[in-house]
Image: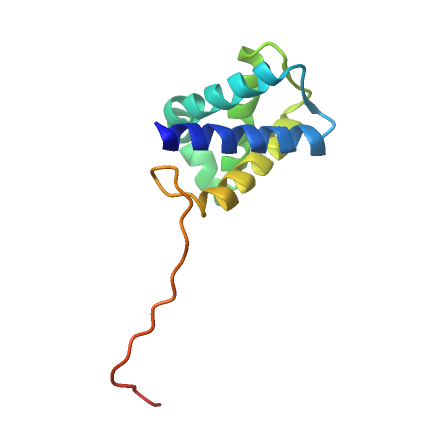
Length: 132
């Protein structure tokens, strides 16, 4: 449960950052932001895989770049479902999805599956050394 809440906050932070950086995305309330983060997680878990399978030939043809458009469509779908979350165009939705993805990727690299902050430990191994 804690990991779910941490990921929800991370997604909400990414959406807030997209709201601050892009003029084509805005929220009218904090409740709309949190509901959008929750619904975006649901859309990414359930609907996005179906979209990826349906658009697989186009994704292969564009060497994977069409995935960005699929992510934008997912974000635009959430904006269509949530009152108080507005996206002007598919371009704004795609750029917003890129911002949300990047912030989720960076912050999730520090968070484990349980929601705890993980630290990296340097491990030195002694033993035989092979010189070239």
